[in-house]
Length: 173
Length: 84
Image 1: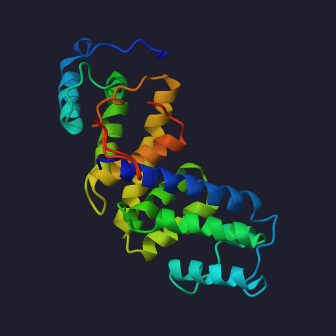
Image 2: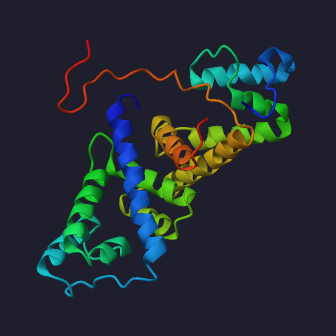
Image 3: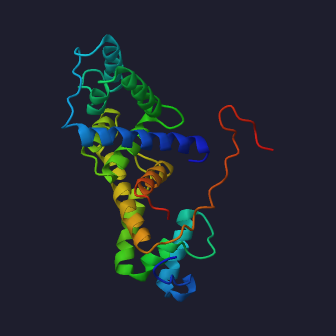
C-alpha cells in the first residue's frame, strides 16, 4: 500500500463517511427526509443516481434525504460521496470496508449498519467481515493503550516518501 | 513523554527478546529498539501474548490483504485520534 494517492483516497473516504454519519445519527430522528417524488425534479435525478450506485431499489439513505431539503447541497454532497467511493486506485470494496471500520469505531449506528450491508452486497463474505471487525477491535485496543501511556510514535519515519507530483504539479528535483 | 519508563529491549527476559525478534520480522524493519508497543505488551506476557496473537490473526491475509488491513488499522487509529 505504497504511494500517497492511496492514502489521499482513504482519507477522503474516512472524512465523507464521518460527514454522512454525523447527520444520520444526529439528525435522522429530528429532521424529516425529503421523500422520493416529493422534491423538485433535480432531487429526483440525484435520488435515481444514488439508488443506482447502491444497487437499484433500496431506500434513499438518511443523510441524503436530509440534505435534499437543499437540492443544490444534495447534488454536491452526493457528487463528493460518489467520487470518494467509486473504484479508483483503491477498490470500492476496500473503501466500503474502511467506512465500516470507521463507523464501528465512532459508534455510528447508521454508518455501521449501512456499510455492513454494502460490504455484503459487494461480495465480502462473513470471514472478510470478521477480518475487518478484528482489525478494528484490536486497533481500538492498541490505540487506547498507547494513549494511556502517551507512547511516542516509533514508526512515523519508516514509510517511503512518495515523490509523485500532486495532480497538476511538477516532479520534484 | 510516556507515563512509564519503557525498558530497553535488553532489560527484558529471554522469551520477550525472542518475541521482539518476531516483531521485527513482522514489521520487516530493524528498529534501534523494539517498537514501544512491543515493549509494553512484553511487560505482561499473559496479556500481551494472547493480545498479540489475536492481532496477528486479525491482520493475516484472508479476504483482505495485509496491506489493506494496515490501511484499515491506520483509519481506525486516525479516528481514535491516536498519534502513536
